Image 1 (cartoon, rainbow, N blue to C red):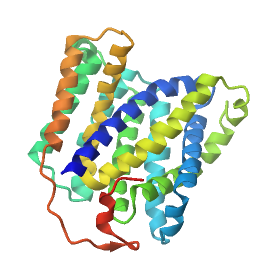
Image 2 (tube, one colour):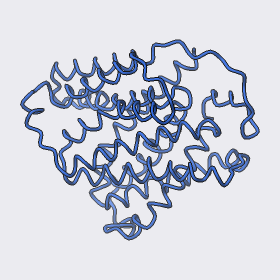
Image 3 (cartoon, rainbow, N blue to C red):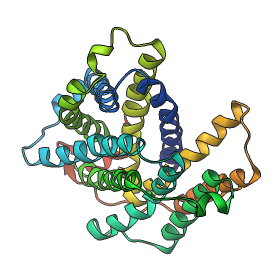
Amino acid sequence: MANNKLIYLLMVLVAFFWGGTFNAAGFALADFHPLTVAFLRFAVATAILFLIYHRELFSTPVKIKDWFNFFLLGLTGIFGYNAFFLYAMQHTSPVNASLIVATNPIVTAIIAALLLKEKLTPRLAWGALLSMIGVVLVISKGSWQVISSLEFNFGDILTLGSVISWSLYAIVGKTVSDNFSPVVTTFYGFLTGTLILLPFGVFSRPGLEAIPNASWPAITAILYLALIGSLLAFIWWNKGVAVLGASRSSIFINLIPVATIIISLFMHEPVTPVQIAGCVLVIGAVMLTTDRQPAPAVEPERTCGKDKSSKEALPH
């Protein structure tokens, strides 16, 4: 149970790390094309991940059939999510996009129930619903006029594409994590995603040629996106999916607006009581879905030369 509590803590930190990527992306996009930012983000993260964990990567056998799942990880969570989201923000407002992203836990739970046969329990369903309501309150500040005046456009459809992409990434990640450690799962997802992004990152303008003249905030932002928002966050996320499952893990995504509110408080920006109430709902929803006894232990299986139970250890 102690290990599960640590996993919950890591997933909360992941939400805060990803909350910071929105601010970092603004600095990076000032000097680079969106797809160039995505390529640099994951190229740097992949290289450093290899340098740190090359022994584990070399010692883990990967079969040809495994590359299909790794390709799906790169296609959905790295290329698909970033492409849909970054281009969506050129056509829609942050309010619209955030409201649509708030459906991620419900979308993930439904797809996981259909594809992975994960049980859609009443507790999980209520948790997903409460978290979405909380996010709506945070973003709309409790104003029905804000919600009722929303007009959905092509950008909103693209945002929905990013939600579906991330849900599929979580589900494929759960399947892959049955056979590989979070480090291996993350690395090969990054590698395939970076290769898919390569031509877009190279030929988009302003692209790689802008690096020598890029401002230090832009470079720092890309390093944050690569090291914190990608390298560390994705390893911990894949660990969480391996232990908690795709549906329960997705609930933590709705902590991102909470992180934004906390950052706003530190920056002395105005925060309304309704937004605080929304944060409480989101936190309560996360507690509702995680306050559960761990599944009974099962007989360890041998996987890739290691006990399957070894996945319970945190990434080193």
